Length: 117
Length: 113
Image (cartoon, rainbow over all chains, first blue to last red):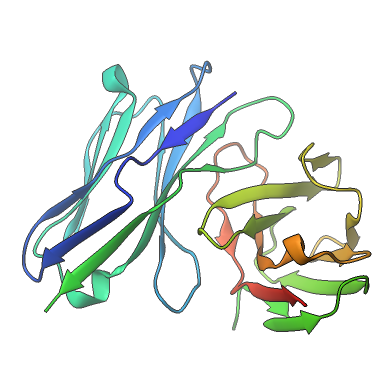
């Protein structure tokens, strides 16, 4: 069975600080997919990024960057120069590449990020 | 245009009642899902469904049943509602290609009194 652990329950930072959200996953599969979703206070779930297990390149999108390290089973998310609008709960998720239920997302418990002005 | 929509957004009902939540997607996806988010924000898959198969999470009570009249709709029926069913229910959709991202509806907050 697969598992996603987000050890940081809540993080508070002052605006313009950088912050990294940790995600560690467990799976026996060699092919899998990792995701990050954002849930702002309004409640919707917003897709941020997908990464497959064969692609270990880091990715940068504006102030967001993701560091995927297969050797440590981690897929961490960094926000540079945080803004108040980044305040949200962030979820890391995993899905397998095959087998029954392989479309289904297994979520971590989320990290609540509060950015203080 | 809304990609994945759910109705109603809020649902307040009494124990023992039967209720339905509707979900529609206009993304042309062939797979749809229901997730439950509890009061601690934990998200858990309930069902995934496409033309070929329905996958039911084994922890979901059989009081919950998905009904799909067509590829664009996956409704959730709940019989004999219990207090513990209070949660936010999210519908999602994706293409069945492995690893495709899922797009979520706005959620339905169900409160059972």
